[in-house]
Length: 475
Image 1 (cartoon, one colour):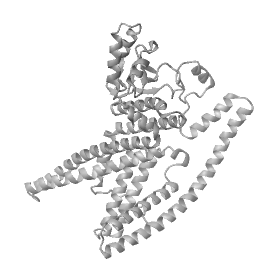
Image 2 (cartoon, rainbow, N blue to C red):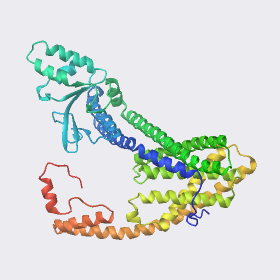
Image 3 (cartoon, rainbow, N blue to C red):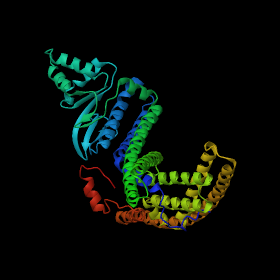
């Protein structure tokens, strides 16, 4: 139906400007994408801790979750500012009884220790903060209580009591937000921490959604600006040539450039925004290939371009042959982008029949969904509606055919991989049975190599030496 790999003719449409603008926008918004990653990571830790604290009173457990919320906000801000520093709760590091609640680190280097207290009673927080073991630490408390805690600590520091020096040290280090240098969390009120504890799933969803919207907003804005600049520049060159030839007037040239610039900005913004939406959804779902900004933007560009093509076909502005050629080109370029960033290609092989069937299914699915949307919202005339219905039925049949072909090809690949995987596992099992650690490790290394990964400690001697050092173990 779609002839995905038959035509290699370059698409001369305006979609190139939207695609490039979207790609540039996703690159410029890469820090926001990193912040989204930090939000998901932090909320994962938050959710797990909240479940473990289910039987603890919210007024008590909110203090533990406060630390995680503040660390997550801090890490998101660090990501948006391209800072390498990150905050870690000691509880999540397996050190729940450490004197510090949070460590601000740059790699393995600890930059600052933090003691955190979240409470509706500032007097209690002030009293807790004055512990001598917290000397020199940053004292983090609720944004709405910090000033009162500081005032009480200063008052007690000047009282002349035996704890005056401790209160003074505490007062000098009290903060309403987790911070180090230019990076800060923005703060968390007591009511926010308590509310997050009472309904942690709702808080998590709202927290993540807020960041998702922020990434999409920033990406769309950057893409629109980049697209407008490129579209304006290309239009200026094209119309300058036309003006030089005498084909248009100066007034017409200016008008054309303005219109082209606006259209390019809108299209690029839409591509960037949709691409960011695809990316955050993929990251949330754990689909690594689509979680990359450049790949998600390529997919978004394909989705938009196919939608435009189907609409033009419905309106009779292009014939069926032109529509199929354009849809085929977009399906091919979109799948190429996905497989260029997919590590699964190392296991399932390079682009071939498997990729072809997936590309066909994706293109057909895209056309099918677009047809449904246009049919529902396009206010079509009778003849236009007939064209859309026919295209929708053809896309549905093509989806069934491509799915059957994909499943058949995938089954063959899985059978091949099963035999290869079994050989690796047999080697590992033999090493365990014979208590030959090197033979076992060789099997693990071979397995990792096949999957396209390299083990950091491929020799037992390296592993043994590393375990004697005070460094994180990253395989």
